[in-house]
Length: 228
Image (cartoon, rainbow, N blue to C red; front, top):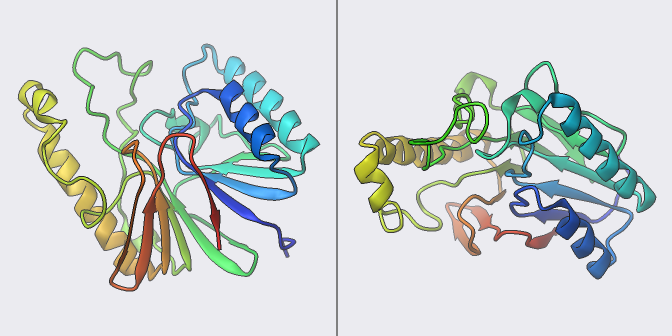
């Protein structure tokens, strides 16, 4: 059984690990769980051993503060380190595969990452985005949970229009349909898993709403929020 410790949910990090350590020092976080909602920034070091080296340094920092750090993948994370052959799981830092579930402090958590990158045009596959980075909804893999952690969000929280996307949609005629379907699939996921609490990131802003008996929160970049 996991010991009862505070749980903090963390917004997108985007590879700013020095800033992450500074924020943990500033808030004096220790003896706790930290769950990142994706876009940790894993996959931009080449070769793969560079990623492992960086994660080991973070792991040592977390170990010194007795922090158990977990992250799902965002659209700015290479899926191979979460779901693939190079999956990283250290003593105090774990990159969680999609549809992973575990009980923390007596609550059942379900984790599912991924999202569409809006800047795929003129980007290099395997370096600045990954073809398999998208959110994949598979109802057969959904399990019941109390708390759901995803990277993107359902349509009833946060922005849901083409504002901010219009220039990218003009360049990529498939983009809006992909984004729309992703948001709708998140709604299906929340209904299927029965979560009462939901956390995500991706939109670089802070939003919250209580909708259909699910309290959902979008976290801003680097934002910590204690789960209660």
